[in-house]
Image (cartoon, rainbow, N blue to C red; front, side, top):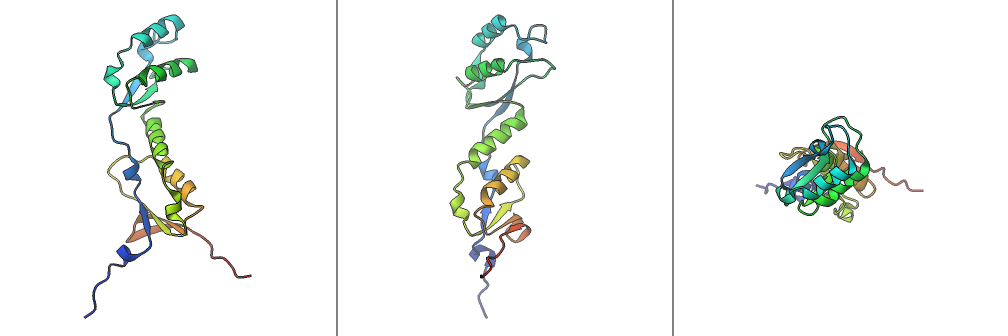
Length: 172
């Protein structure tokens, strides 16, 4: 009787699990609406004072998105001032909502990926995850891996959907 071989385990397929790039940590939003004069406008002198007096300890080691929950015209420098202040305590600060924060974090993690590890190999992007992986990450990964991978699939190594296959070189 012949030995059973796990062909998936012995194949050259490389699996990328985007969930492994998910940065752990508390995600919070900083809403600058309470710092606005009458909930509508930035008065520079008062705004600067409020930012200066802001208790940043509540943001210690947090992943923070800075946004405004009301319709108001916020000068860019106001967001920048808050980012500077919050960075004293927070692990990461972005201007935007939680989705923007997630995209930033995932992009930052993906930029550390060694693309050469996928050269001329079939690549599977794992499809199921328990953590929220933004759609952006899948598109960014395609952009990064496509120039080097032999093929790109989505799903699990035992059940994939083909996304891309490099054309075979023609003999000339």
